[in-house]
Image (cartoon, rainbow, N blue to C red):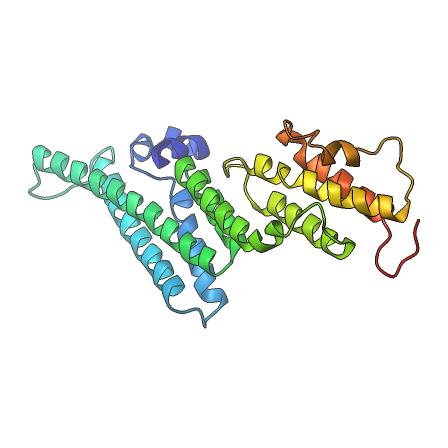
Length: 269
């Protein structure tokens, strides 16, 4: 989907009343400038931002300005009736219009690429909410592919941030290690986008050892197993084929641990 088609959806009244405007390339203007607005907010919100992030923001602002100039030129050339331009033949005008369209298309490509570069700098700084916002802006401008790519890159960063905690998950974890493990898995489900390949399946792989650790603590404490408990079922891999219910399964394990297992220094329930 191009910005041109997005414009027709987001500004139908304008398109109907100004036929020439509907033919302009790669714009709704409001959609095209949103990544630049975010870049400006990043710079204005923290005057001490420097280095790569500041450079990517400035590049995006510059490219957006050039895009708007090229798109504006195309709109003027395509206007009906045509404005009076001395000494410009119809053929010259057509050539200029084609060139303006090409410039706008190329600049929009650069704006998207610059947005992805800015997102890379934000990922390096751990500013994931801004990355999610930028992905949403790209999706809103019709760049679903770029937005999905960005969300997948973000998912990889989130996995990496929690990697050590996830590696520590085992069926012999002591009670003090179980809660951090649950929190790490919840963070992955909350922060890793659904577009990330096999997110749920990967998280699901950690549930059997987590459930085994919880089950072992329950047995050691002599806790009574509720009739509806699925801890033992999950511990034996009973949900391995159902990654779509991974969040529900994790919530059940967390509830069992919170409600039944004795915490260090607390009496058995």
